Image (cartoon, rainbow, N blue to C red; front, side, top):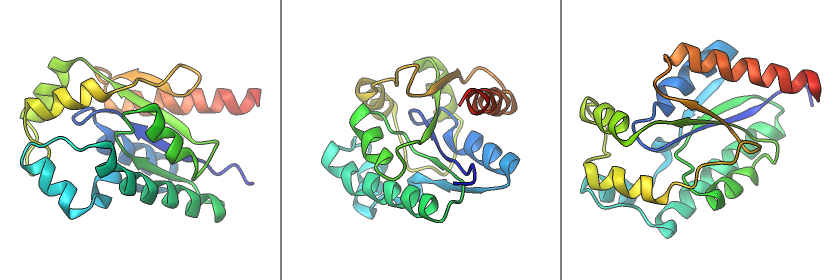
Length: 173
């Protein structure tokens, strides 16, 4: 392998996965995939109506994203995918696509997330109940599993901190 990387940018809705993921991908000169664009129409409809998704709703979606990670890995090409990956089990499914998946976990307080969601336009994710559902489902990754960064940091600083950590890990590895 040439040093290509598959990177997951994870966190609850409103954490900045898409924005930070795009910045990271641009900085690295690689593809960015918004995991939300791969939800089944029925799941998007549920979320638009304020109904939280179940594990069963998410399974096919997670398998699609794992397949994308696998596709990029098989071609030895780097990619960044933004996906909530709320539960440890979900991240295990995604790792089927690349066991060496690098994870950036964007964490923030409920108040920060709520404010961001209130200011976001044109997204299917609606309502406090949906945010509360995601926060209730969230199983934060352990420090050995992901790099957790606070969304209070500017997006460019989040990208820089993640890249510095990755470079440090590569020097050690």
